[in-house]
Image (cartoon, rainbow, N blue to C red; front, side, top):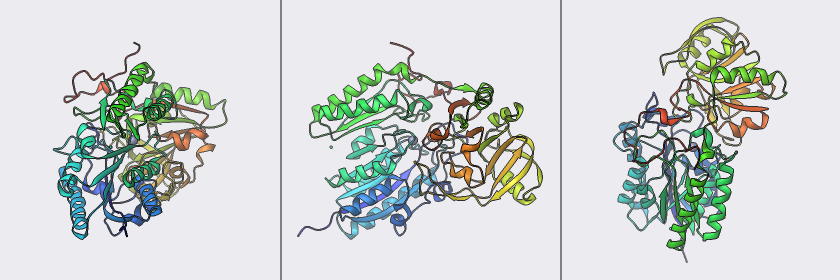
Length: 492
Ligand SMILES: [Zn+2]
């Protein structure tokens, strides 16, 4: 009689921005805004089961096949600066401790670890490569190690070598995270070539709901089928990490090494052919607000303005005020903005009470450019809600003391803990129905599109202050590999 398969499951997810204002600390992993808290072995299965995280999909797939899951430690922190040495060492130590206990209790058939793939830690620029090295050192080379990856992963040769299976999500907005977890677990229950691309794709152009990415993913599927590879892994990379492996990369897993290498070459050739189509398409804040006001006067659904450079999902602090100042200056009536991350202002609103008029030094804590405003406190909440959109359904949000304030015709949600504006529920929980607004402003680059594009009559991506620059070529990098083009070439 064969024994049940025994698979360890854990995770350590972070997307790190070399130039973001705040580092990712231990506390940020313990309780991230908008996603499951840090899970130890006793709580991991129930903590992730109903979430949109890849681990939720992996648990469902493993249980379907009667696998014995051995939980480790799992955690996620919202994108920010590099992970502090303290957080990296504590979390790595917890995972390796739990893994050691699991191995002492009996042999493991596999190790599943939720990774993002673009984590920088103090002292370890390829933090996932380092974590996988430690996992291998503890578990040995015979056990299969598998991880889903966010396609913003800067997929390094060390990661590809040390993991047996890597499965990137196929979408941006990431609405298929659970699917990637299921597929990773599926491949774990039943091997490599890698190539890197010579140019960067700006974040707003990486969206898989619009060309050229819709074409790239169709081509990816066609090549995988034609070459007979099991997994053709494409990561478009996170272009804010200052280390040599930053960028887009392709890896293939299949029964035949030559075919796997050919599949990588085919997809890289296609991406080179489409380089010019990955150009930037963004507007300065003043022009974006003016266009939104003009368009909203003659359409039914809201105009959605994406404040891409202060995206809390890309390392922004969610508190810059440049776009808000422009909305007030142009008197954009019927506008709602989600969200300004400013615990001090939220506390001041709670102290004053609903209906009060308050003077606030709003936002700007991360860049020293707050906005002095006189605002009316319209609604106070504890910042608790459950997400309902395609990317985050089922995830609990705990944004701390929250206030909806009115500044002229502009309503602003002020929260105490940052979260990317990717789910309509963050508006609804303060009484705003986004579809009924004239203009909806979201601090997000692309993820908002999953839940907001369907109600938008038009989406405009605008540039205002923040570290998630639409054009990474404007940053001063020191450690990139020679020859990497920081902007796609305009033509061939
Ligand atoms: Zn991502």
